[in-house]
Image 1 (cartoon, rainbow, N blue to C red):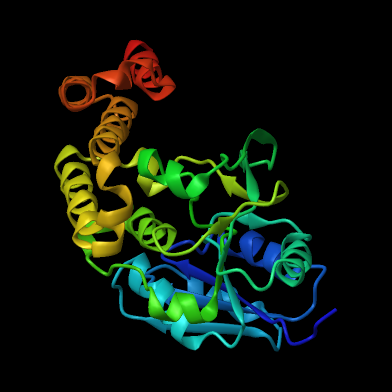
Image 2: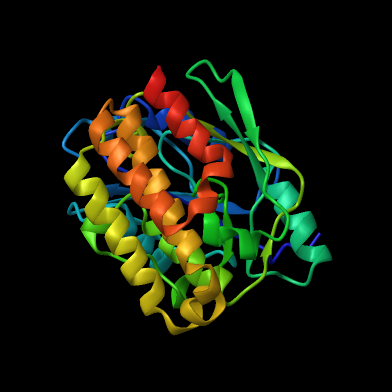
Length: 295
């Protein structure tokens, strides 16, 4: 095995003192030994700093900075990373012990690809698997109709991560990952081995899912569309899918407004999605919104 392959696990965190230790434990428990863990504390006001003082690991770096949101926190981690590959992990999610070992195997067999996305489980707070998210075929094209990637567990070659960083506009926070994945997908093949190596923790503190306000959500969606198609390479690759992309973004907004029980607003954006792309009515996500509105 090539011992020069080295990973940097980058974890942004904000006020997650009560959750961070289980997340870190899964990072430290990797079966492949050549890695570092970089925890970027984005200005936490809780006792995160006190909690992590108990950690004794020579490959663990804790860096506290002023609060600037998760995009800047991840970019800070990119600049600090020593690894040839970066893997992201949110502060409430978990890696399985095989994550880096499977990555090494795949990297060596596939000529050091720029981006790798394994499948992931969605688990509850007891780590019971609720469902498994499998990456679709032809994911580079499919990204125009949905953010299938997420953040936790994705692997990016460091030179790519340094060149293509997260958009730091705070108002985009929550969709900053999707905007970056579109830029990367327009330029590089995203490799999707059919293996599960991490899990996303579904809980009521997940800000993107549960803490929804109409004004900020719609501003975020509008910025996502704006920034995505300001990129010339993205525009060239996805121009013929732009209406589908916009309708998906509106369906996303409608669903999350429905989850927040903002039914009138949800219906408004559902109708906008239909007007832009009438075929959206045969998409299962359309029926997911209707089901949520009726519960």
